[in-house]
Each structure stands twice: as structure tokens, then as C-alpha cells.
Length: 457
Image 1 (tube, rainbow, N blue to C red):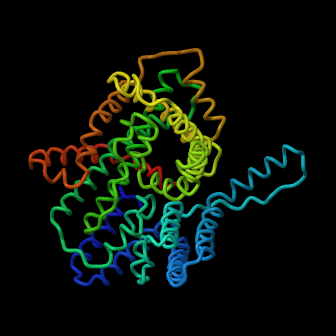
Image 2: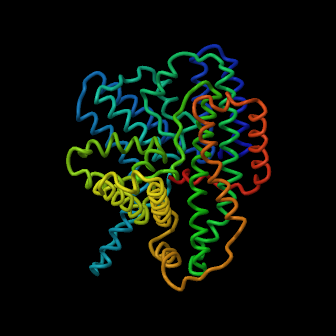
């Protein structure tokens, strides 16, 4: 059930009306739980059983941890959650890799490859409950005593499939007491939903046509075509996930709840570290708190810790060597940044900072090739068109260039309008102008119906 589908709004609007009509918080929570299960089951109803099992298991494990703090309980809880993720997302990849190695050694053996099925959002909601279990063990939070509240925290439909990854300490307290209707917050939520839809439909889905064409047959591309196709994908991915995350925050705001913003103009970053503070912020914070710091963080072997953390981040995105190498590339870049001297021309001079931004942006774009390509050979073919002779040029697709430049110019003011209640504070005429522009993009390009990219993760 896509956020940009009529089916979703057929679920959302009655849920929204009933939520604000009900005066009892317990009834509201039951409503949110029912809507979340319908939302999740619409794609594949048997997956609801997995979701319910995960809710029940983690609730019970949390109660056990609260009663008697135990490393064994923590390891069992985290291990069980990661085992489900390992089976559904990585078992086929591991089996295929083992069979490849066995074939290299000419061994007449083969590991059975399990059938591939990936429950929607399993990577996101697994990380959410793993954080819950670790925070309980660290005694940063207390176990949620209400199974109903815990279930809503676990499967709240605006962020169930692709985040933002919410922390128990931030979200569970919001479910404890009935919220009052706040016109200002509702107003902001409407803008976030509208703007998110415009980003998805009017930007990401348009750029998807150029990106898909470029990556479908890279060997036929000119040098300019390869670069413009890569830029198209970089901004498609950004607008797609930014649009989804913004809509999720907006839907929560319509229900009087707050989710964290997940993007902050990442392509304006002047370092890879800065990029990861701005891109998919909740995931970056998760890997920092639950992988990088436990490995030793900045205290010992920071370069190795960065490499391992980013390799795992790549593997989290997908079961394939392209994703692993994408993560390793970012890890090497982050480690190299730490080794470079601070200060100097690139840090203090305006043109030095601009050159640094240019290098970071293109470094990120080059790594997106691995993220988008279906396999290593396809990635190598695309890199060849980017970097190897003959350097063939053409006029280039002017329409795509216009889209890219236009989006690059407006992303900063759009992002600023999402923060706090900035949009609500704008003059009413400006609000109407922006809303009408968003509606235009939604209606003009509503026919593409491209799935959200991060739904596959």
C-alpha cells in the first residue's frame, strides 16, 4: 500500500477522522494498531503473523529484562531478532556465495538455496526492536508495561515500512496520554504530506525515467549520458526517500504525534561525515550508537571501526556484494577524512570549501553506481562509461539538466520549511503559492506510479 496511492488515503482518512473523534486513548491506540495491521497486511497478509510474533516476543523479552537485568536475555532477544532478519534477507545470498566458493574449489557439493521472500520493512522494524532491547539493558529506558502501547510503537503505520527509525524513549511517552488537537501541528502535517508527495511524484518519479534508461544499458551511453544518468539517480534516490520520510512525519503530525526528520540537505555536505549527519539521519544515529561506539568508536582503531560499521550499513541495505562494496567505499572515505590534516585552504578559504563540497558530492555519486547497479559487472560497465575512453560527448538531455538544477536550487528552502513550524509562520499568500506548486507537480506527474525505493530494504 503505497503512500501515493488512493488505497492508502482510503485507509488514512477514516482513521484520521475516527482518531480525533474518539475521546479515549486506549480506543485510539486500538484504532492505530488495527490500521497498522491492515496497512501491513495489504501487501502480504501472512507477514502480519511475523509482525505479531515479533511484537509478542520483544514485549515478553522486555518484561524479562526489566524484572532481572541479564546479558543472556539481551543476547537471546537480539539474536532472535537478527536471526529472522538473517533468514529472510540474507540466507539466499549466503547460500549462493558458499556455492560459488565450493565451485571455485571444484567440490561436488552445494548448499540448498532457500526461496527468496522479504517481508516489507523487516530491516527497519528489526533495528527498532534491537535498539529497544539494548536501551533496556543499558537502563536508558524502562520496559513498556502496556502490550497495546508497545504494539503501536512497534508497527505504527506511517513509519513501519521504511522509517524513520524511532527510538522507544522518544515515541512511547507520546502514546501514554491522549493528545489534544493542535491546529498548528495539523497545519504543518498537511504541508509535510503535500510536499512529500510532490517530492516523490513530481521529482523522484520523473528522474526515475532518466535513471532507469541509463542503468538499463550502460554500454550504449555517451560519457555525458552516463554522468547525467548518474546525477538523475542520485537526486531520484534523494527525492524518493526524502519524500517518503517527510510524508511519514506529516501523517504522524496529523495524528498529533512527532517523528524525527530524516534528511537535512545532504548534498550540501562538505565532508562524508557531514553527509552522514544529513542523510537518513535516524539510520546513521542507529549505527553510531549500536555499532560504531560499541566497537570502540573514536577511542581505539577508529579507522577499522568506521570500515566495519559502514560495511555492515551496506549489507543492511541489501544482500549483495555491490551493497557491501558501497559501504566499504564510504568507510574508506570516512577513515581517509580522519587522516587528512585539519585546517588549510580547503577548510578556511571559500573556494577551498566549494572544491571540497564538489569532491564530496561526486564521491557520493560515484558510490551510488554500486548502490543502483544489479551486480558488479553492471557497475563496472557503468564506471567504464564514466571514466574510460573514448570520451564521447553530446548536447545532453536538456530537460533532465533543467530538472536537476531546479531541484538542487529549491531543496534548501524546502528543507527549511519542514523544520519546526517554519511553514506555518510564512505569510498566508506564500503558503498558498507553495501548496499550489506542490499540487501542480503531484497532478502533472501522477501517472508514473513508481514504488518507493527504500520499500525494498
